[in-house]
Image: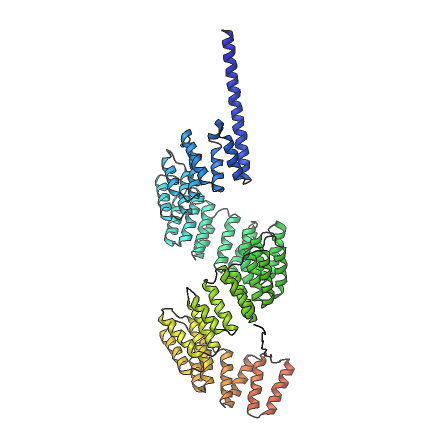
Amino acid sequence: MYVIYTNSKYGLIKRFRSTLGSIRSISTIHSKIKDMVSKGLNHQILKFYKELHSSDIYANAYIIPSVIKACSFSNCHHFGIQLYSIVLKSGLDSDFVICNSFISFYAKSSCTESALKVFDTMPLKDPISWNCIINGYFQNGYFTQGFIMFKEMYECGIVPKPELVASVVSVCVRLGDMKLGRAIHALVLIDGRIAKEIFVLTSLVDWYFKSGDSLMALRVFDQIEVKNVVSWTALVSGCSANLDYNMALDCFRAMQINGVRPNRVTLIAILPAFAELGCAKTGKEIHGYAFRHGFDLDHHFLSSLIHIYCRSREGLQLAKLTFERSNVKDVVMWSSIIGSYCRSADSIEALKLFRWMRADGTEPNSVTLLAVITACTTLTSLKNGYGTHGYIVKCGLNFDTYIGNALINMYSKCGCVVASHQIFKEMHIKDSVSWSTLITAYGLHGHGKEALCLFHEMQLQGVEPDAMTFLAVLSACNHSGLVKEGQQIFDNVKKDGKVSLTVEHYACLVDLLGKSGKVDDAFDILRAMPMKPSTTIWSSLVSACKIHGRLEIAERLAQELIKSEPSNAANHTLLSMIYAESGNWFAVEDVRRLMRVQGLSKCYGFSQVSAGN
């Protein structure tokens, strides 16, 4: 009897030690898996779990959620399905954490039906379960089903998490649905449980800015009791995105006055405002702040910084230094620096950077190639243009409408109208810019009738001409001396009233009439203009009067031009030529003496001839 008792006692102690050892083992394994999850070692987690399969621990409720997460991150869909089978066999399918993990797993694998099945089989659902299924629908583009689920959740009396409401608001932003967004806002206000949640109110601030209602965004922002860096960043970013740069700067200053330190995202949001307002000095201060707080090596921040430096000629060197200092040079950064050199008229350096980019192994995108085409156009370099065009065809970007338009312009500026028309024919989608660019190309080379034919063809194909198209047609008529046609098009546009005529349109018509000898008609147009005539219009009238022998009128107009623009040497030269035409050499000498005293000299014109193209 004693022996039996001793044995039974020993067995009880052994079983207790075994259970204790098992608990310690589960705790150790759980800690190990969590550590691997934090390090992103997802494949190693799955491998480690396979090794556990022979023990009883593999179906433990503490371990499985981490393994499911590893399946999601490593895209091991089949492993996840097998894991769900283990859960069903082990009777763990009623566990909240495991079921929620599987809903997220199936949603990330784009298996919304499987996610819904897991959700429906759950005996009880907590707020996280609803969050998972609703976000799953949104992630996979099933917005209507997501909103229906959100409504059903509310009807069940479950309070949504602030993150879920923010997710719903972000979907309203994507859909551009003002009515639905306002309904969500009303729901937030009525339901006092989430009305003061900072996460929810910040998402509403972002939504109102993206919907173009800045005033309402500011009102919602004022309702936030404790404003954190995310709230302030949403405010600054919204103002900047809506091109209200002065307001963005004011908010940025107010943020610091309130003791909130800007983070990396805030700096990226405010830099475009500094760039647009020409605050290069403030950009340097931001750079210093970023350097002190360790943001200066972030390539997104550096891309924005390069943009602000490149807005000023003296900042171009700083931009290049910033670019060279960056450890990660992505396509955005390359495009930014290449585009900046193009805008600064240093096209040779832009092309050098493009070659460096290719040698570095970074593939250019359409934005980069648009900048390169612009550089070729500025240089009127057909050789570089051919090379760029060939590369575009190899990349398959020749079907991009923007690139096609840029190529039409490039070939026309390089003197190849036939090539421009060929590009136009090969384009699958032609917008009004495509037509306008080709019309401009023909007009520039004196083919006015071909430009008019294109204009009429454009109208026949149902493409609506815009202000730029009419300017291109009038300019083509001007270059080719098509007075009747030009005047008729101008009158039709004025009568139709769909397109507002600008001072450039009037300048084209006045120049056209003046060149053809209809100086009085040109003056009539000038008097009837609804806006103040530009100096270009007055200058073209002076030239017309000079050409057609109306020297007295030309002299008076030229003197008025000099009064309005005393530092413009071209006006003085024009008056000198009028005096010379009328034989008044003393007056010619007086004008030249005045130019010498004022230090004015006429700019010389240059021609470029490229050999070997």
